[in-house]
Every structure is written in C-alpha cells, then in structure tokens.
Amino acid sequence: MKRTRERRGASPSVSFVFTPLLDRQTVMASRDAIAPSPPDETPVVAIDVECVATGTTHNDRAVAQIAIVDARTERVVLNVYVKPTLPVTSYLTPLTGITEALLDERGVSFDEALGMVRAALSPAHVVVGQGVLKDVQDWLRLERGTDYGDLIDLAGIWRVWNDRFKSWSVFSQDHLVRTLLGTSVEDAHDAVGDCVKSSRAWLLYERVKHSPEELAAARAKLLAVTPEPSFAKRFPSFEGVCQGNRRTCSCGAPFFS
Image (cartoon, rainbow, N blue to C red; front, side):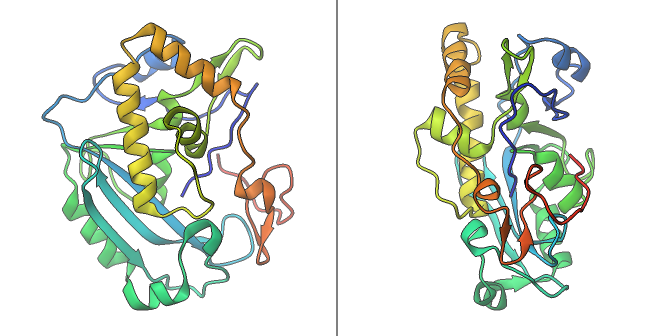
C-alpha cells in the first residue's frame, strides 16, 4: 500500500529503475531515458503490501496482506494475509479492505508469510510496483541478488519532466490507472488488485515507450489531468490514526521519504 503523492515542482528521491541493463546514474540524468525491458525469459512479477495501523502515528504500521502477481499474465502467484503481533489500532478498512474477521480467519504469522514470499521468488525475478523498494526492502526485508534480481518502480518509469517547474513530477498508482488505463479507482486497496494495476501500468509503458508520439501523449495527459485527492488528503486522521499527509500531519512522527 503506497500513496505516492503527485508532486509538481519537487525533485523526488524516487528510484527510476533498478536494473543491470542500464546504469542507474545514466537513467536518472536523462529526461529522455527509456527504461530497459527485462528479457522475455525473465520472470516479472508485481508485488504489493497492505498494512494496518498499530498506533496513532503515520509510521505505526504492520504488514497485513502480501500479494504477488505475474506481471505478464496477471496470474495470482501468492495472496496471503498476515496477523500482526502488535495490537491493531485501526484496520484502515476503507483504505485497505482488511477487517479483523478477515485476519482472524485467514491470517498467518509474518514469518510464515515471508517464507511463502521467498519460495515464490528467485534471484532471476524482476519485481514491478509502485514505490516497490519500500515493499521489498522495508516491509518484506528482501535482499537483491538473493530473494529477487531487480526492481522497476512505476513512480520512476512514469515520471514526467515538468517544464513549468523545471523538475520531475511523479504520480500515484491511482492517478496512473485513472488517467492512462481509464479505470475507476475505489478507496479500498486490495493487494492483489493493486498488483494487477501495477502490471497493466508497466505493460502499457512497455507498449508505448518506443513510440515517441504515444509516450509523449501519455506523459502530457498525466500532467494535464488534475489528480483526485488521496485518502490521506481527504482524511488526514482516520479512527485517530494519522494518515501521513505532510501538510496536515499532527502526530509529529518523522517522514522518511
């Protein structure tokens, strides 16, 4: 569960793409850089993590759902619910779709879920997602070269150079889906559904990236369409839990990205 903020006029510290096929510094330095494609034989999966709140600050979160979907076929590789060890302050149900009953019925320990994740991946896998580095590194504690091969971040490959502000604009998954795929977006985010969205957004990029006209049109549309306010903007605090909107945060917890 990531809420990448639509930012205009900022220089975001998001990764563009992690891959040995092209030096990262070369990619980051060029406005016209095209993310390289994984070879056809390389397994590509989307990963998404949903979290519940275990306290009242925006950093008090625990993994509650993990999904892995084949990015080329949309086959569900893994969908596992995790029962947190800490008491849950809020299941953030309108945002996550997760309920106490669901975790009581289907939840397993984090260690068991992590074992399933590692069994589904290999050093050959390329992982696609929105803010995917946070999912694989912070939430799942996976190691590049051991648990997976490389990462492709949708926030990076679909970023757009904004001439008005002379900097990059990056967009949330919801904005990508609404604007480029023409798909309606509900508040509740299911990890499997988010993986499917990530897969489709990546495949769209793969399809248009070698057509300057199509890629330019997609990028222009991302800039032209006004993003809808996120859950965190509409509900800075939900059930007493800060949602991490930088402008309206009242919990005082630090921001790490």
